[in-house]
Each structure stands twice: as C-alpha cells, then as structure tokens.
Image (cartoon, rainbow, N blue to C red):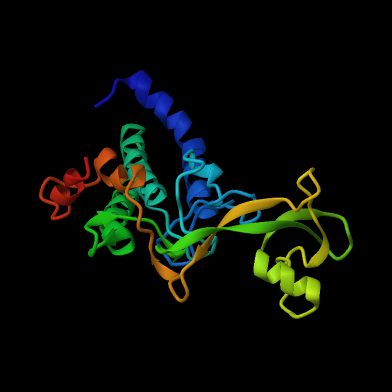
Length: 243
C-alpha cells in the first residue's frame, strides 16, 4: 500500500510511463514474436564486433553478423522486469484490475519465454542468439571506400586481401562493397605509401549460422540480477556457478 499522495502522483505519471514502455517494446522487438533485439547495430561501424550502443553495453560481444534474427538476453530481461514494474505502478495508481493483470501476465509470459529464447542447454547458461560463428580467426583486410550510386554518402568497408587482389587483376565479379553502398570508390592509404589495413573476424567455413552466441559475460547474469529466476528454477544453480 502507498499513501494517497504517492498514489495520486503515480496515477498522474502512469499514462506517460505506459506510453514510453509500450513504445520501447515496439521499437526493440525482434523478428520472432515475443523476442527482442537492440536495434541500431551498424555492420559498417569499423569495429571488430558491431557495437550495440542502445544497450549501454556498447562493445559487449554480440553475434558476429548483424541480422534481424538477433535476440538479446539482457533486453529480454529488461522488458520482463519492466512489465513487473508496470504492474506494480498500475496497482498503486488505482488502475483497473484488468490493466494490472495484463502486465502481470506479460511479465510471467516473458519470464517463461526467457528459457525458450535464450537458455543454451549445451552450455548451461543464458545467451544471446543470432547469425553467428563461434569459431574463426582475425585476419588483415584492406580498407576501401564505398558509396551510394548517387554519390551522396559513403562508408569505409573492409575487403579481404584475396578479394582485393582478385579485383585488381579483374579475376572476380564478386561485388567489393555492401549492397547499401554498392559503388566502389578507392582503397584508403596508410599515410606511408601503403594500403590502410584492419583486422576483421573471419568465421570458419560453414560455422556462421543461426545459433547461440558462445560468450559468458554480464548478459548471462541478467535473469539473476533482475530477480527473474524463482528459487525453484532448474536454471538457478547453473547460473550461480558462473559467479
């Protein structure tokens, strides 16, 4: 129970908070119903692993390839936690019981689907999911400039040494640039008479596929940190082992 003043304050706050929460869920939803992914990863940001700025864990290792199929366990956990918060706010604000139950049900469904979406049974931990390779190597690439057909915008793009050399010999028809910036402009120099190079992750042949991201870190603990796991959860012991 809360005092009358707090209840009135929460009632005034509820419409705006609810609008923000529903917008957040809609803007960060994944391709699979009930899943969520941090939007905004840019495969052309020049990083070894495209950053996830919207998550607040900017350079945390995510799937090796940016795709709509990604599912991020920290975000799923935040939304599940947020639904429970919305249920409590609605209850204390004196909202209709149907609204309170709606958010409680949403919370319970998201906690249940957390296991289906993110529990890696082989590794016994919660993981991100996406088009990813858990095996590969970092190799030097030539940095080239690619642009839009009308020349209004351009990006730096890493090209494998072999692909670049084949292109120079006219021995390949494989496009050197990403589809959004298909016009090859020029290679960048290193300021010392050579080509500008950068390391890039090269997945092992046939290893890059839709799968769990094999990385143990902060996001593996989010279901525990946000108290989404009940004491009787069969996952709890395995998660505690990670600490």
